[in-house]
Amino acid sequence: MTSRAIVTGGAGFIGSHVVDALLGNGYEVTVVDDLSSGDARRVDSAAELRELDIVDFDRLCALVEEVKPDAIFHLAAQASVVASVANPGRDCEVNVKGTLNVVESAGRCGAPVVFTSTGGALYGDDAPMPTPEDRIPSPLSPYGASKLAAEAYVNTWSLSSGIPHAVCRLGNVYGPRQNPHGEAGVVAIFSNHLYTGKAPKLYGHGKPTRDYVYVGDVVKALLAASGKSGTYNIATGVETDVATIWRELQSAAEQSAAPGAAGDPAALEPELADLRPGELQHSRLDIGRAQQELGWHPEVPIDQGLRMTYDALVEGFEQD
Ligand SMILES: NC(=O)c1ccc[n+]([C@@H]2O[C@H](COP(=O)([O-])OP(=O)(O)OC[C@H]3O[C@@H](n4cnc5c(N)ncnc54)[C@H](O)[C@@H]3O)[C@@H](O)[C@H]2O)c1
Image (tube, rainbow, N blue to C red):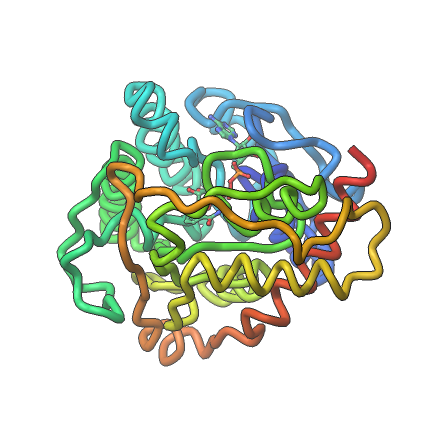
């Protein structure tokens, strides 16, 4: 019998890749998305897209009871730190109440949920590096706080229902289909700058580091986490500074056969600026638990991932 999956946020950057992987594994896939930051064009036509706000418990629950999924991948979120500061009420509604709605609905059909939380926005600057999952979180933004509260609901519902729900704390995810117009996601932003011939701003003078993980590796981890209960850092355990990301992308742009790149990418000189308030200096996650318990490990090294991403993003810029 065909397995069924629901992917919330399946019209988003990471969610759309989860949808593709599930379809490739023979699942029937239903996407739940309100298209607030997602794009219906990202959803493969073999999946069914239901436009729905996860805050609306009655509609969500009715859909889950109708589909009777074997697995739920919960990626729908208010995912912008800046928007969470501007409107913490809506951030809380979507990320906390929306997540509670997802695990409550999942209880109606016994489906395990994989919830995507954040590694970058939970552990503060004082955390040991690489940061393990048992580090007491100290979020710096409403977004980090709402993800932490949502994690507590996921874990509590898993304990009380006996359904194995998993929490995956993602590092800085990059890859094809990432939005180049947000305030975060430097890989997509820098790629767009290279494509349009615009010099970027390197905050923190290019020195802040992040644990960048390729979206294809993240998808494999989320699939491996389905049916497990636990909290897992999903990253690479390697930190890369922003200036290196810029240089790697510059060289990817120089070597790219993709049409339409403006001017000479090597001639673009980035502007150096101070770190913005609330931004972390460094982030590197300990992925030992995911490696041991999920049998997962990241496969795509950053230089290779950046090249694949640049070429794919430029193709998307051409079409927009
Ligand atoms: N991108 C990263 O580096 C990163 C890092 C850590 C965690 N995450 C988490 O991974 C998940 C996916 O992130 P992304 O980068 O793909 O973001 P995204 O904004 O591209 O995707 C989120 C999707 O959720 C949908 N959505 C938002 N509010 C909704 C609502 N109320 N009801 C239904 N759908 C709604 C949006 O339309 C969008 O399609 C999010 O939970 C995010 O917090 C992402």
